[in-house]
Image 1 (cartoon, rainbow, N blue to C red):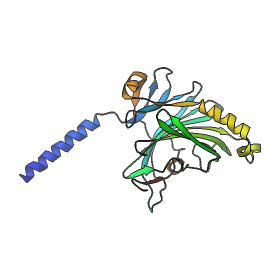
Image 2 (tube, rainbow, N blue to C red; image 1 turned 120 degrees about the horizontal axis):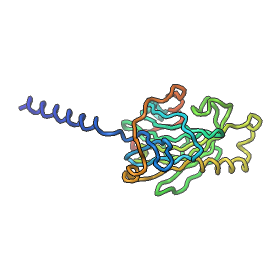
Image 3 (cartoon, helix red, strand yellow; image 1 turned 90 degrees about the vertical axis):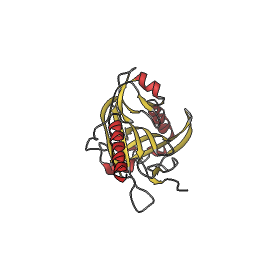
Length: 244
């Protein structure tokens, strides 16, 4: 009887592995039917995608495992899928980062880096968190070609804080403005308005994705220039599920 149960269990596992192996991954990339742009796509948990501005040209696409910092004695576990675009003036990053195991993302009001400006508002049934930051290549994996960048980040926390959706826009800061641009309200307002126009986060459903996303595919590993260490810091910290 015991041998029979073991055989049944082995068959059940084999069937599960076979079935799951034939299913497309939940995270990947595809082409927006309306524009032909390649974009990050989440097929479920929850379904969403991005719509970059027409002048944004794809530069890089990939995924990477992460070890974000935590308040505990060990690092967390996560995976990120991201796309990098450029319009010749600024850089756009769209990303989805999922926790693994018993981790969840820190509450959204804890930014990954110190913020010059922070605000939040309702967005398509969720809460969108916006931050303006000034970062350098030492802390920002997407600002390595400049002394400093002005950064706009829009972030959603979904799936009980297990999924983080990020849309981020960068522009290099002229060397003469590095010390004072954080205090220039007019310049910050203009940058924020430009940044908001570079991409839209599309909160959708499976039916919309089937009609509007073509050629869905899984992503290969990210380019080596986007190191796991910097990306792990870029996504922010994690905490154990259920931690008060």
